[in-house]
Image 1 (cartoon, helix red, strand yellow):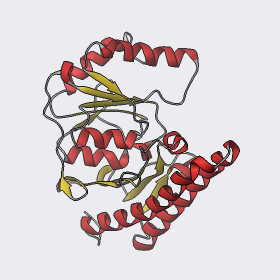
Image 2: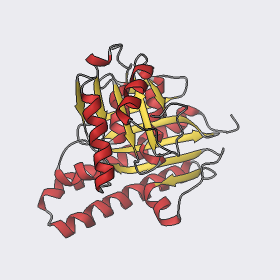
Image 3: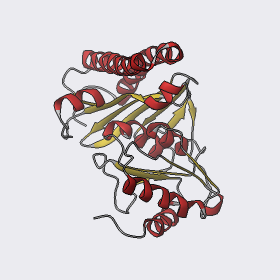
Length: 275
């Protein structure tokens, strides 16, 4: 690895950045219930921007030569291309709808890719104070304790998570609900927590067995959780088979046993393969 820094340094700096941003989110979270609707939108935007700025400034100070991709910056500058350079991919506030409603599934997600491979991941939920971390080859942790994906090997006994997504045109909603309708007969139950990053961490620590999402915002939703999941013994892959592509805006995750069974069930639920 052509870098003068160690993976431990990357992790330490990312954790510091996540905790700083977490304080801002916590403050805004408890403020939301006092804000009228228009002001609420502003509060979300301000919290988002303040957190991203804070995180990027902290990372840039320590690693000035690294590249950066973030939800706010990428939206402003067009889609950023992922290169082989060490690249920090940041979602400063995942779960904005939850944030608005005071539903405590919100987090900061920070991921570092090196040669396009997720290498360091930090996902921090400041409301329930859960810090998930993962470093390639060094395991995954929740608040410093090692975590492992579940060992459930039966689809019918598994807990599945997904998200509806933001698109509300009839054909998208119908496809989504038809898929869910089919899957509900094949799993124990379904959860929608409203945070892609926390869903990945949920599979990593064994709370969930499977998760998939189609059409989420961008790589910042998955960059942190991907390595945490893999280091916990979970699998991350394309929902239509094939390898996970961090830039594809679709993801599936499972414990170490359910991938093939789930892919079959999803294909059956799909009815027709996407183009």
